[in-house]
Every structure is written in structure tokens, then in C-alpha cells.
Length: 635
Image (tube, rainbow, N blue to C red; front, side, top):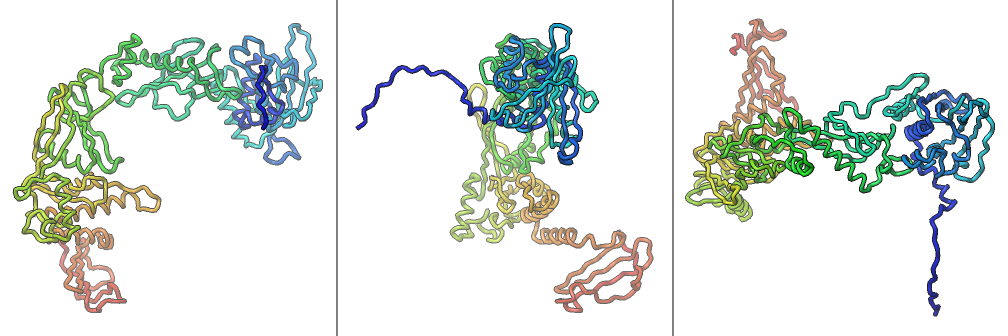
């Protein structure tokens, strides 16, 4: 058995293992935008005020698609070429290196591509110095071989740095990458001799505030896009998730930050594409939110903001106006979420206003809205908005917390669930006598079969509204209704089970429209019909179902035939002539009236008749007769 050795005190110091160089190409994504950003940043730190970038054909032997890219600046140059491969060491002056935490790894953005660097350093005296040139291949960045720096009389004069590398990207791709890298840079950049446009990162700001080396700008805009840049680090834009405030009416205010001299700001090295999450970053976000409140406080008219924003501003001593006592009038949800629109403006709320706080599906809310209109209750109903909770006027409003239906049939009162369960049980047990509204209706006329007639209706329907007051008391208000749907969950039209009150005057078109709002939910699968086709098919089926409930059997049959004619063969009929179709058993007689100008049809006799083949393969030759009348057709 091995005896454990007691541990002794050991000093351990952080170090970088030589094999870390093997991962150098992974520090950057090797894309053209990253390369240009790093090279422009290096030029800025080197004191340059101009950068000239060219992209030209690489010449014979390099491939037709290869371009030679040259990035030349007029900065103070690099005195010691060794700093290019001394990762973690830079030639920047100490204050700049501390302010920006310059890692000395920018040239590694070209570790995969390879490059040639030529530079001439600025000297305190006016005496020119000889420049140098060094070619770097991927193995040089990995530390596998040593690079050689050679004297170069063609280096930028009197001082500056030039980096050359080959790129396989297209010319347009490179131009776009340079334009993006220089858009907010604090120096001028040209591409193939054309000076690129620079933009103000805080352009359009409503308010500008200098804070801890940052310039914070508040802008009124759309809601920010995912990963949209909101911080400008000397031309390098990063998303650090600064807050935005959205008003109750959809307006949005965002904040952008521009770095002037902010040593406390930490970005993840070496590429600086995200922020280090520390206390200072949270302070920036808190300050940014307060700047939004300060920007919107004096606006006229004042924006309507959520109570949470109002409270946060008040804690910071910023007084925001309380929104007026106005809400959106309540509208029931529709099964087709894309079909719901808000077609009324904000309305003042009175002391008798009810905030609709109960959550129900369209088959519930659509009949309730119809009943509320008939009872004169609809103008008192307003949409709930939890963002307003906390404002005194909103908290004082009564809430409509629930709506329940009572259906009276033959002296028995049912809830929707109880009546629906009765029908389901009857269908399961094969008891048609219980599967209908009245005991003397025919089995095929019961609601579950979808063929109720006007006389087979509920004696009455009432809706009980539960209302909660701000003081905690609860009350129940009852209003009459003329229709409810027993199947109140999202489903197919076939699942709809309307129950109509005996005194209802709802027509077939009204019921069909109500069914559409409550049940039509089109599919967006790639293998289904278009939205319009699905809508037409649903409307036909809804009208057919509605007629079964509010019309006689004959009327329902006539409408179904009319719909079929319109949908299937109406397009065949002459636009300027009447068409009479008579069907007797298997015989179909079609009579065409004369054209509107009174002339006989071309190629057809004015009098007489002749057989017309509808389906020669399986039709009795005498079953169809087509006639053309001499008389002028009626309208």
C-alpha cells in the first residue's frame, strides 16, 4: 500500500506556455471586416489621421480571383519590428496602453492569411531614418520559424506603416468591409482613391450627456434590433446591451455610447467584440436609462410610459408626467391573430369603466362581445394594460374577471361545460334522446350533428359577469345573450357547437362572420392552399353550418347549390347573357338568353334545341338539353 506524501508549500506563478502560440490563428475570425477594423485601429493608435486602402489584381500566378490589399497610414510608424510578434507587448505609449488596454495582438488578425509589413518610424529630429520590411507567413505567427526584417527604402515616408496581404474576397466585398470599418472611425479612410463617408454615431440624438469618459446620446427610434451596435469604441462598434424604453403607444427611445477616454470600460480582448460584464457596465446601463428619462421628461405632448419607468425616474429625482386616464376600448380576440386590428383610438375611462382582465379564447370572447353590445355594456369595457398597474387612476378601476354562461332548456339550467358534456355522453352512449336541445326534436337535428333548426333552440341564454372592485369587493352582473359556442377551445370549424336562444334574430351571414372570427385560423405550412383560398373555403363551410342553425332545410340546400355554382361553373357563363339551369333527376336543361345587343349567338341557331354532352363517357344522351332563347334576356 502506497503511503501518501504530505504536501509541502509550493510557489506557483502564472505563465504562458509556448504551445499557446499554436492557438494564435483562433484569436480572430480571419474575415476581411475584422482585418480592416484592427488595421484602422492600429493606425489610429499610431497617431494617423489618414488611411489609404487599395485592392488590386495580384498579378499572374496568384489566381484570377486573388486581390492584393494594401493598407497604408501616416502614423508615427513602428520602430522595432519585433513587437509585431511579441504578443501581449505593444509599442504604444504607456498612457494609451492603459486607457485602451492595447493587447499588442492586432496584427494577429492576419495570422491565417500572412502579410508583409513595411514601416518607417518618426524620430524626434527631422533626420529621416531607414524603414524596414518583414514578410510574415502563418508559421511565423505560430513561432515555428523566425521572421527576418530587412531595410526598406520604399517604406512610407516621412513616417507611417504599410500592410499588404492577399484576399480572395470580391472587390465589392472588400469595399463594403472597409466602408463598415471606417463608418464611425475618427480618421479619414480612402478605398482605391475614393474617400469614404464618415458618420456621426450619435446623429439625431435628443439629448447628449458626457459621463465618465463616455458620450451618451438618447435617440427616438424603432425598437433596437437583436445584437445592434450601441457603443462606438473609436470606430469599432459593439453591442453592450444598453437599455431602451418603450412607451405605451409604441414609441421607443434608445441610448448609444461613444468612447472618448474611458479606462474603466473593459472589452473582451483581443477583438473587442463584446463587453466584460462588471460593475461599471451595470453603472453605464443604469445611467443610460436615466438619460432616457431626462430626455423624455420635457417632451410635449408627454409620452405615456409604464409605471415602472415612472417609479424608477422618481427615485432618481426625475419627474415624469402621469399618463392621462385613457385606455384602448376592448375588442375580442380573433382566431386568426393576423386579422386583429385596433381600429379605435384611446378613450377616456369613466368611473363605471371595466377593465377586461379575464383570459379566454375567441369562441368565448366573440359571443360575449356580441352580447355586451346588445346590452349597452360594450362602451364600458377597456383592455387591460399591466404596464399601467401602479398609477392611482388605473388601480382604482373595476376588473371584469370572469364570464360564465347559463343556458336554460325546458326548465333546466346548464353551464356550457355541462351541456357540452351531456351531448358528448349521449353520443358515446348512443342515446339520441339526450343529445338534443328539446326532447321532441329529431335526432339528426341535434347540436352535435350540426343540423339544428330555428325551432330547436335554447329557451334563454344569460352571461354572468364577475366584477372585482378596487376595494376588494366582488359583484355579479347578468346580461342576456343570444348565442354561445359550447366548444370554446381553439379547434376546427367542425368542432363548433353553437347554441342559439329562442329570441335571437341572428342571421346566417352574421353567424358565419361570427364563426370566422372565432374559429378561422389559417395554416402557413408550405403544402397548403393560399390564405385567400383557405378563407374562401372556410367561409363557404361556415355559411353552410350557419344556415343549418338559422334557416330551413330548403333554404340551406338552395344556398349550398348557389355556392357550388358560383365556385365551380360561374366562370363558364357568358357575362352578358342570362343562364337558366333546370335539373330534373338525371336530366340537366341549360337555357341561354340572347346577348345584351339582341343579336343571335355566333354559330348557333336562334331557335330550336340540341343535345349537349356534359360527360359523354357516362351520360344518358337525352339527359341534358341546351337551349338558346329568342327573347331578350332579363336582368
